[in-house]
Image (spheres, rainbow, N blue to C red):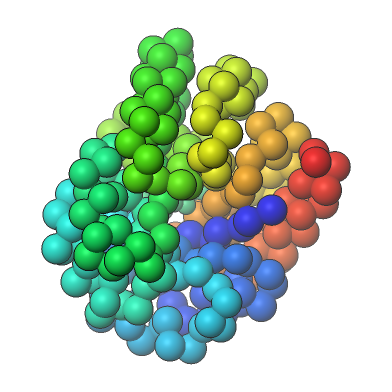
Length: 227
Ligand SMILES: O=C(O)c1ccccc1NCC(=O)[C@H](O)[C@H](O)COP(=O)(O)O
Protein backbone atom coordinates (compact mmCIF):
# COMPACT_ATOMS: atom_id res chain seq x y z
CA UNK A 1 0.00 0.00 0.00
CA UNK A 2 1.47 3.29 -1.18
CA UNK A 3 0.65 6.20 1.14
CA UNK A 4 0.94 9.90 0.31
CA UNK A 5 0.62 12.55 2.98
CA UNK A 6 -0.30 15.70 1.11
CA UNK A 7 -0.39 19.47 1.64
CA UNK A 8 2.74 19.72 3.77
CA UNK A 9 3.78 23.28 4.53
CA UNK A 10 6.86 22.80 6.72
CA UNK A 11 9.87 20.54 7.30
CA UNK A 12 8.75 19.14 10.67
CA UNK A 13 5.51 17.79 9.24
CA UNK A 14 7.12 16.34 6.12
CA UNK A 15 9.80 14.62 8.24
CA UNK A 16 7.20 13.32 10.69
CA UNK A 17 5.21 11.79 7.81
CA UNK A 18 8.28 10.01 6.44
CA UNK A 19 9.40 8.79 9.87
CA UNK A 20 5.93 7.32 10.42
CA UNK A 21 6.20 5.41 7.14
CA UNK A 22 4.68 7.52 4.36
CA UNK A 23 5.90 6.66 0.87
CA UNK A 24 5.34 10.16 -0.47
CA UNK A 25 4.86 13.69 0.76
CA UNK A 26 2.89 16.25 -1.22
CA UNK A 27 3.19 20.01 -1.60
CA UNK A 28 0.32 22.05 -3.01
CA UNK A 29 1.21 24.63 -5.66
CA UNK A 30 -2.43 25.06 -6.67
CA UNK A 31 -4.57 27.74 -4.98
CA UNK A 32 -5.19 26.53 -1.41
CA UNK A 33 -4.88 27.70 2.14
CA UNK A 34 -2.05 25.14 2.25
CA UNK A 35 -0.33 26.52 -0.83
CA UNK A 36 3.47 26.69 -0.82
CA UNK A 37 6.04 28.23 -3.14
CA UNK A 38 8.91 26.45 -4.89
CA UNK A 39 11.31 28.52 -2.80
CA UNK A 40 9.71 27.27 0.44
CA UNK A 41 9.70 23.64 -0.70
CA UNK A 42 13.37 23.95 -1.72
CA UNK A 43 14.14 24.48 1.99
CA UNK A 44 12.40 21.19 2.88
CA UNK A 45 13.25 18.58 0.24
CA UNK A 46 17.04 18.36 0.81
CA UNK A 47 16.34 17.17 4.37
CA UNK A 48 14.04 14.32 3.40
CA UNK A 49 15.07 10.71 2.89
CA UNK A 50 16.00 9.93 -0.73
CA UNK A 51 13.51 7.06 -0.73
CA UNK A 52 10.44 9.23 -0.19
CA UNK A 53 8.63 10.66 -3.23
CA UNK A 54 8.30 14.46 -3.23
CA UNK A 55 5.22 15.34 -5.15
CA UNK A 56 4.08 18.77 -6.31
CA UNK A 57 0.35 19.27 -6.86
CA UNK A 58 -0.22 21.65 -9.79
CA UNK A 59 -3.30 23.12 -11.43
CA UNK A 60 -1.15 24.90 -14.04
CA UNK A 61 -1.46 23.67 -17.62
CA UNK A 62 1.92 25.07 -18.62
CA UNK A 63 4.68 22.48 -18.75
CA UNK A 64 7.44 25.10 -18.53
CA UNK A 65 5.94 26.61 -15.39
CA UNK A 66 5.59 23.19 -13.73
CA UNK A 67 9.11 22.15 -14.80
CA UNK A 68 10.62 25.30 -13.32
CA UNK A 69 8.94 24.58 -9.97
CA UNK A 70 10.05 20.93 -10.08
CA UNK A 71 13.67 21.96 -10.55
CA UNK A 72 13.67 24.73 -7.96
CA UNK A 73 11.77 22.73 -5.31
CA UNK A 74 13.62 19.43 -5.84
CA UNK A 75 10.50 17.40 -6.63
CA UNK A 76 10.55 13.81 -7.87
CA UNK A 77 6.97 13.69 -9.17
CA UNK A 78 4.07 15.89 -10.20
CA UNK A 79 0.37 15.53 -9.63
CA UNK A 80 -1.57 17.16 -12.49
CA UNK A 81 -4.64 18.44 -10.69
CA UNK A 82 -6.07 20.96 -13.14
CA UNK A 83 -7.25 18.95 -16.11
CA UNK A 84 -6.68 15.80 -18.06
CA UNK A 85 -4.85 16.77 -21.19
CA UNK A 86 -2.42 13.93 -21.99
CA UNK A 87 -0.37 16.47 -23.94
CA UNK A 88 0.81 18.03 -20.67
CA UNK A 89 1.94 14.68 -19.26
CA UNK A 90 3.69 13.85 -22.54
CA UNK A 91 5.50 17.18 -22.62
CA UNK A 92 6.71 16.75 -19.02
CA UNK A 93 7.86 13.21 -19.80
CA UNK A 94 9.89 14.58 -22.71
CA UNK A 95 11.33 17.46 -20.72
CA UNK A 96 12.49 15.14 -17.91
CA UNK A 97 13.31 12.19 -20.23
CA UNK A 98 10.86 9.98 -18.33
CA UNK A 99 12.65 10.57 -15.02
CA UNK A 100 9.75 12.34 -13.33
CA UNK A 101 6.77 10.56 -11.79
CA UNK A 102 3.40 11.72 -13.14
CA UNK A 103 0.09 11.32 -11.37
CA UNK A 104 -3.11 12.49 -13.04
CA UNK A 105 -5.95 13.61 -10.77
CA UNK A 106 -9.45 12.63 -11.85
CA UNK A 107 -12.20 14.42 -9.96
CA UNK A 108 -15.33 12.77 -8.68
CA UNK A 109 -17.92 15.57 -8.35
CA UNK A 110 -19.75 14.62 -5.17
CA UNK A 111 -22.78 16.80 -5.97
CA UNK A 112 -23.37 15.33 -9.42
CA UNK A 113 -24.45 11.74 -8.73
CA UNK A 114 -24.67 9.53 -11.80
CA UNK A 115 -23.23 12.27 -14.05
CA UNK A 116 -20.04 12.06 -12.08
CA UNK A 117 -19.77 8.32 -12.60
CA UNK A 118 -20.18 8.81 -16.37
CA UNK A 119 -17.60 11.60 -16.50
CA UNK A 120 -15.03 9.60 -14.55
CA UNK A 121 -15.58 6.55 -16.75
CA UNK A 122 -14.92 8.63 -19.88
CA UNK A 123 -11.85 10.27 -18.41
CA UNK A 124 -10.35 6.93 -17.42
CA UNK A 125 -10.85 5.66 -20.96
CA UNK A 126 -9.12 8.73 -22.41
CA UNK A 127 -6.22 8.44 -19.98
CA UNK A 128 -5.86 4.74 -20.71
CA UNK A 129 -5.82 5.43 -24.45
CA UNK A 130 -3.16 8.13 -24.09
CA UNK A 131 -0.52 5.75 -22.64
CA UNK A 132 1.06 8.83 -21.05
CA UNK A 133 0.05 8.22 -17.43
CA UNK A 134 0.67 5.32 -15.09
CA UNK A 135 -0.94 6.57 -11.86
CA UNK A 136 -4.33 8.21 -11.36
CA UNK A 137 -5.60 9.85 -8.19
CA UNK A 138 -9.36 9.96 -7.68
CA UNK A 139 -10.24 12.99 -5.56
CA UNK A 140 -13.50 14.62 -4.48
CA UNK A 141 -14.71 17.82 -6.11
CA UNK A 142 -17.15 19.76 -3.98
CA UNK A 143 -18.69 22.71 -5.81
CA UNK A 144 -15.67 24.58 -7.17
CA UNK A 145 -13.28 23.11 -4.57
CA UNK A 146 -10.97 20.58 -6.19
CA UNK A 147 -8.77 19.49 -3.31
CA UNK A 148 -8.27 19.44 0.42
CA UNK A 149 -12.04 19.29 0.80
CA UNK A 150 -12.20 16.75 3.64
CA UNK A 151 -15.19 15.21 1.84
CA UNK A 152 -15.23 11.63 0.60
CA UNK A 153 -17.00 10.51 -2.57
CA UNK A 154 -19.46 7.62 -2.66
CA UNK A 155 -17.11 4.62 -2.68
CA UNK A 156 -19.89 2.09 -3.19
CA UNK A 157 -21.14 3.97 -6.29
CA UNK A 158 -17.55 4.38 -7.54
CA UNK A 159 -16.60 0.75 -7.08
CA UNK A 160 -18.00 -0.41 -10.38
CA UNK A 161 -16.56 2.53 -12.34
CA UNK A 162 -13.12 2.23 -10.82
CA UNK A 163 -12.86 -1.54 -10.94
CA UNK A 164 -13.78 -1.48 -14.64
CA UNK A 165 -10.92 0.89 -15.36
CA UNK A 166 -7.65 -0.13 -16.94
CA UNK A 167 -5.77 -2.50 -14.65
CA UNK A 168 -2.55 -0.95 -15.97
CA UNK A 169 -3.38 2.31 -14.22
CA UNK A 170 -2.38 2.40 -10.57
CA UNK A 171 -5.27 3.93 -8.65
CA UNK A 172 -4.84 6.20 -5.65
CA UNK A 173 -7.92 7.11 -3.60
CA UNK A 174 -8.18 10.54 -1.95
CA UNK A 175 -10.84 12.85 -0.60
CA UNK A 176 -12.09 12.95 2.96
CA UNK A 177 -9.94 10.09 4.22
CA UNK A 178 -8.83 9.87 7.86
CA UNK A 179 -7.69 7.20 10.28
CA UNK A 180 -11.24 6.02 11.03
CA UNK A 181 -12.45 5.52 7.44
CA UNK A 182 -9.33 4.66 5.44
CA UNK A 183 -9.78 0.92 6.06
CA UNK A 184 -13.34 1.04 4.74
CA UNK A 185 -12.20 2.86 1.58
CA UNK A 186 -9.46 0.28 0.99
CA UNK A 187 -11.78 -2.67 1.54
CA UNK A 188 -14.37 -1.13 -0.80
CA UNK A 189 -12.06 -0.09 -3.66
CA UNK A 190 -8.81 -2.04 -3.16
CA UNK A 191 -6.68 0.84 -4.50
CA UNK A 192 -2.94 0.77 -5.17
CA UNK A 193 -2.52 3.79 -2.88
CA UNK A 194 -4.24 6.30 -0.63
CA UNK A 195 -3.74 10.03 -0.13
CA UNK A 196 -4.78 12.39 2.65
CA UNK A 197 -4.43 16.09 3.47
CA UNK A 198 -6.93 17.58 5.93
CA UNK A 199 -7.77 14.29 7.68
CA UNK A 200 -4.36 14.18 9.41
CA UNK A 201 -4.23 17.83 10.45
CA UNK A 202 -4.67 19.61 13.77
CA UNK A 203 -5.16 22.92 11.90
CA UNK A 204 -4.95 23.85 8.20
CA UNK A 205 -1.36 23.28 7.12
CA UNK A 206 -0.31 21.63 10.43
CA UNK A 207 -0.13 17.84 10.76
CA UNK A 208 -1.12 15.90 13.87
CA UNK A 209 1.22 13.05 14.91
CA UNK A 210 -1.49 10.78 16.34
CA UNK A 211 -3.78 11.21 13.35
CA UNK A 212 -0.88 10.56 10.97
CA UNK A 213 0.26 7.46 12.82
CA UNK A 214 -3.30 6.10 12.99
CA UNK A 215 -3.88 6.74 9.30
CA UNK A 216 -0.72 4.94 8.17
CA UNK A 217 -1.23 2.03 10.60
CA UNK A 218 -4.88 1.49 9.63
CA UNK A 219 -4.20 1.81 5.89
CA UNK A 220 -1.45 -0.82 6.00
CA UNK A 221 -3.55 -3.18 8.13
CA UNK A 222 -6.55 -2.88 5.78
CA UNK A 223 -4.48 -3.51 2.67
CA UNK A 224 -3.17 -6.75 4.09
CA UNK A 225 -6.80 -7.93 4.43
CA UNK A 226 -7.93 -6.55 1.03
CA UNK A 227 -5.26 -8.47 -0.92
O1 LIG B 1 -4.98 19.97 -0.02
C1 LIG B 1 -5.30 21.06 -0.51
O2 LIG B 1 -5.47 22.08 0.18
C2 LIG B 1 -5.52 21.17 -2.00
C3 LIG B 1 -6.10 22.33 -2.50
C4 LIG B 1 -6.28 22.49 -3.87
C5 LIG B 1 -5.89 21.49 -4.73
C6 LIG B 1 -5.33 20.32 -4.24
C7 LIG B 1 -5.16 20.13 -2.89
N1 LIG B 1 -4.66 18.94 -2.39
C8 LIG B 1 -4.34 17.86 -3.25
C9 LIG B 1 -4.35 16.52 -2.68
O3 LIG B 1 -3.80 15.62 -3.31
C10 LIG B 1 -5.08 16.25 -1.39
O4 LIG B 1 -4.41 15.29 -0.67
C11 LIG B 1 -6.48 15.74 -1.72
O5 LIG B 1 -7.20 16.79 -2.30
C12 LIG B 1 -7.23 15.20 -0.47
O6 LIG B 1 -7.58 16.22 0.43
P1 LIG B 1 -8.42 15.86 1.76
O7 LIG B 1 -9.84 15.60 1.36
O8 LIG B 1 -8.27 17.05 2.62
O9 LIG B 1 -7.76 14.66 2.37
